[in-house]
Picture 1: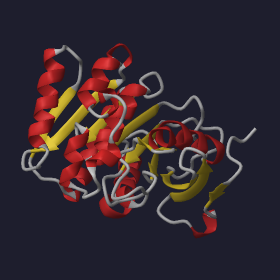
Picture 2: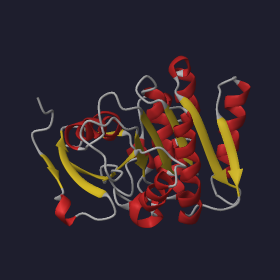
Picture 3: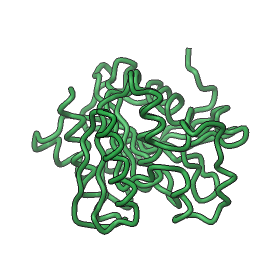
Length: 266
């Protein structure tokens, strides 16, 4: 039985660059959410491919990874060259609350469950190659890095590996990007506001973890602090620093590092 009563998917006759467009209604959003999906050419309904969920940052939406970073074009080429295995990229909106929802539960809308539960289930219903047996991964940039690391840690039995790029590591850092009052984002527990606290709480079920940050990024000191605290606690992870700032050229380049990291776990 389909889980979603309302699910709309684009017509293949009008799609391009192996991108599909999905809109699904869910109680977690109290309305509809969009997902842009890259599906490798030639994928059949019987195939079982890994699925990578990519989370955008503030101001963005489902289109950001594809139309600001061209990630689907890079992945398509790398698959053709044999440098990546065929994989599905799912790029959902965050729910479009304010400048960015933080992928949190805010009021009566649960943006976290939209990502962790609704997005995979929607793919299973309508995307060739997305099966309930598909290995699941998640990555994101900035606010999306905060979401990927925090949600991935909470759902560690569901996601095989997670990564973040230029990640917000604690909720107060969102003040650098939005003028929405910080109190509007407040959660009931520090576990839901801070990546380190989330990792500590779920440390016995964490997936594989990597994150990176540009040395000229305004969030570099916070990523260094997270790395230091995780290392002190003996929590396994990969942390890297590279030239660059809080910008699309950095994310478009280093998302491939995450995808290759995910591929190594298969």
